[in-house]
Image 1: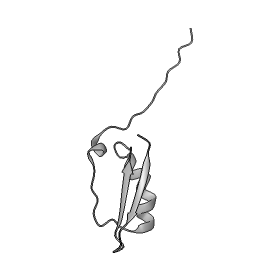
Image 2 (image 1 turned 135 degrees about the horizontal axis):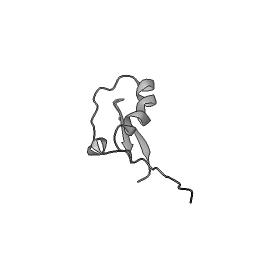
Image 3 (image 1 turned 90 degrees about the horizontal axis):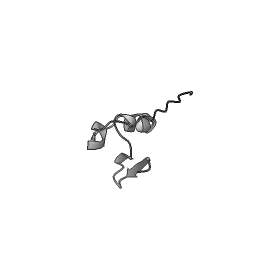
Length: 64
Protein backbone atom coordinates (compact mmCIF):
# COMPACT_ATOMS: atom_id res chain seq x y z
CA UNK A 1 0.00 0.00 0.00
CA UNK A 2 1.24 3.46 -0.87
CA UNK A 3 2.05 5.68 2.14
CA UNK A 4 -0.52 8.45 2.36
CA UNK A 5 -1.53 11.05 4.94
CA UNK A 6 -5.21 12.06 4.86
CA UNK A 7 -6.37 15.22 6.62
CA UNK A 8 -10.12 15.61 7.13
CA UNK A 9 -11.67 18.86 8.38
CA UNK A 10 -15.23 18.51 9.68
CA UNK A 11 -17.79 21.32 9.38
CA UNK A 12 -17.36 22.05 13.11
CA UNK A 13 -13.60 22.54 12.58
CA UNK A 14 -12.51 19.21 14.04
CA UNK A 15 -9.46 17.83 12.25
CA UNK A 16 -8.64 14.17 11.73
CA UNK A 17 -5.22 13.04 10.55
CA UNK A 18 -4.99 9.50 9.20
CA UNK A 19 -1.70 7.88 8.20
CA UNK A 20 -2.25 5.04 5.72
CA UNK A 21 0.30 2.45 4.66
CA UNK A 22 2.66 3.07 7.59
CA UNK A 23 3.80 0.45 10.12
CA UNK A 24 4.97 0.93 13.68
CA UNK A 25 5.92 4.39 14.89
CA UNK A 26 6.59 5.55 11.30
CA UNK A 27 3.06 6.98 11.21
CA UNK A 28 3.75 9.25 14.19
CA UNK A 29 6.97 10.50 12.64
CA UNK A 30 5.19 11.16 9.33
CA UNK A 31 2.36 13.18 10.92
CA UNK A 32 4.42 14.97 13.56
CA UNK A 33 4.76 18.16 11.49
CA UNK A 34 0.98 18.37 11.11
CA UNK A 35 0.37 17.91 14.83
CA UNK A 36 2.86 20.68 15.57
CA UNK A 37 1.23 23.01 13.04
CA UNK A 38 -2.36 22.25 14.07
CA UNK A 39 -1.89 22.02 17.84
CA UNK A 40 -2.18 19.35 20.48
CA UNK A 41 -4.32 16.38 19.43
CA UNK A 42 -7.62 16.06 21.27
CA UNK A 43 -7.64 12.30 20.80
CA UNK A 44 -5.06 9.92 19.35
CA UNK A 45 -6.11 6.46 18.15
CA UNK A 46 -3.51 3.89 17.19
CA UNK A 47 -4.61 1.41 14.56
CA UNK A 48 -3.47 -2.24 14.52
CA UNK A 49 -0.78 -1.31 11.97
CA UNK A 50 0.93 0.76 14.68
CA UNK A 51 1.77 -2.42 16.55
CA UNK A 52 3.31 -3.97 13.42
CA UNK A 53 6.97 -3.68 12.61
CA UNK A 54 8.30 -1.27 10.05
CA UNK A 55 10.07 -3.14 7.30
CA UNK A 56 13.73 -2.43 6.87
CA UNK A 57 15.39 -3.54 3.68
CA UNK A 58 18.99 -4.57 4.05
CA UNK A 59 21.28 -5.74 1.35
CA UNK A 60 24.66 -7.35 1.73
CA UNK A 61 27.19 -7.81 -1.04
CA UNK A 62 29.82 -10.49 -0.87
CA UNK A 63 32.93 -10.19 -3.01
CA UNK A 64 33.94 -13.51 -4.49
